Image (cartoon, rainbow, N blue to C red; front, side, top):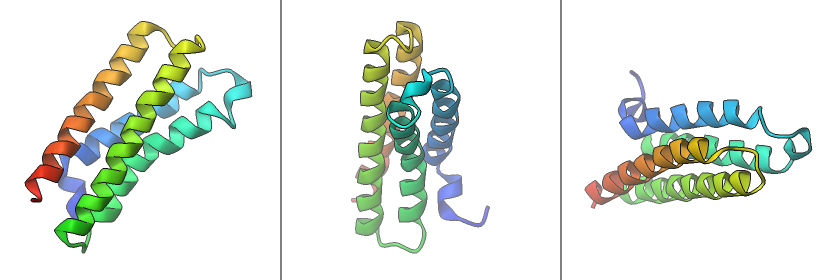
Length: 117
């Protein structure tokens, strides 16, 4: 693989999350298309995008800065999950599955940030 980020498991997990969120939001009511659906998809996409952007040709402090952006976007996805559950768009089971994925990405991002010093 040509780019450093492509070998990062956390980036690969973030891509999976973005694909899963895209599929999930297709089940949301049409009136949410420009609101929660859009926000949740952008946040999920932003996790992998920030990992990729920060990884290539950057210093460790710069990479860490982008990893923190990715972490914040991941947390934004969690908040969107809470909103979707409260509004009755997703079940507790679906919420729990996506929440666990976000927790895993959070742990992976935190470990990567810590490893960069």
